[in-house]
Amino acid sequence: MRTSTYLTFDGRCEEAFEHYAKALGGKIEVLMRYAGTPGEDMAPPDWRDKVMHATLTFGGNVLMASDDPPERHQPMQGFSVSLQCESVAEAERAWDALSEGGTVQMPLEETFWAARFGIVIDRFGTPWMINCDKPE
Image 1 (cartoon, rainbow, N blue to C red):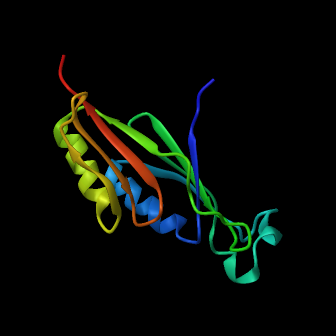
Image 2: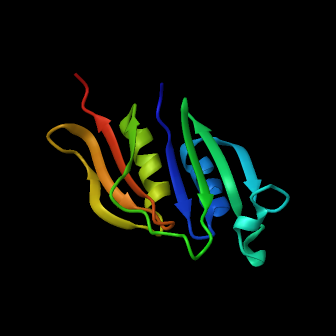
Image 3: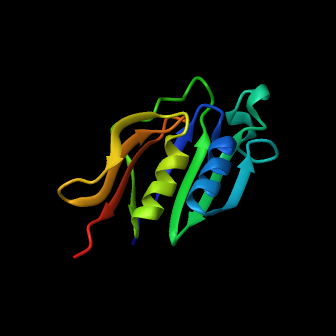
């Protein structure tokens, strides 16, 4: 058994996943639109080019998402996607990309438990916690 994070967006899933693929060094494996699927009628006609399901892989991880039609979309809250980075350079690179245009909740900095730790809500509304442990 394993777990994967599934995000929902307000119509910007494709844009967000293209950004995440670049920021995290990943690859979009699946990008399925509402149009042409059995779920096409779940979306308003002007929404059918939006993403019904997407899958992004990076570093052995899987991140999934979709666009929720406007009448069903709820802003993301009550969780964070937590990135555990192997190096300070990796943490800083991810931070720079994910914080661009976002809202910093806690700056990326050294803490008593981490070489780097920070919290940001990116420009797509996704909350991220970035952590790089101190060397033992």
